[in-house]
Length: 225
Image 1 (cartoon, rainbow, N blue to C red):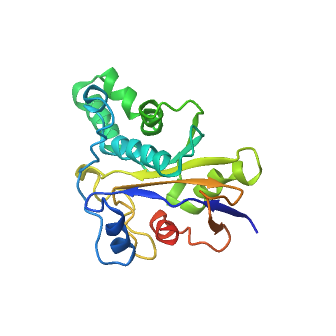
Image 2: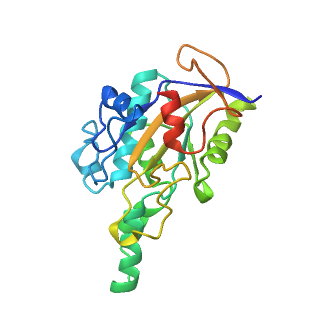
């Protein structure tokens, strides 16, 4: 069976910003709020963060925190998201239809790799990153793909990041809202963890890819919290 080891995750979501609150979320006592609230990322300069979207700030915070928590150093990152920076993508589409032009700044930040690229800049990482889109909300295939480099030994460890931001109101009804188990797929949240093919002091939670609950990112997060 394919097994890997994962560190304790770091998480952030509107209304669920502390470790104790994440345990309440895991136990069904509280829910993630559907707002555009974002972490402060106060470790970056005001100029750097002034135009960043919710998802970019969440990913930057998560990458920063997982490096601080695990002392993993400058290792490769893999970013997974269902929609990416969807608010900025919507703004670009609106500019195209209404203004008949696209502003360069809006376009450059709307690309799918923008959140993890900005996290690399903010955290001064040079090892590189990959991005992955889970087609049809298939989180299991996405996570299995991200784990492949460490399972086959090409990488000793990697930072795994999953994030979605709040979907614009204009898109309401155009995206799958719930999974078969009732999980809300449109919740804005991020989590990050270090994954490895070998057990260590950092990565000591064993994940069996055949038997772990990988139906949704929320289900997997609850398993490893």
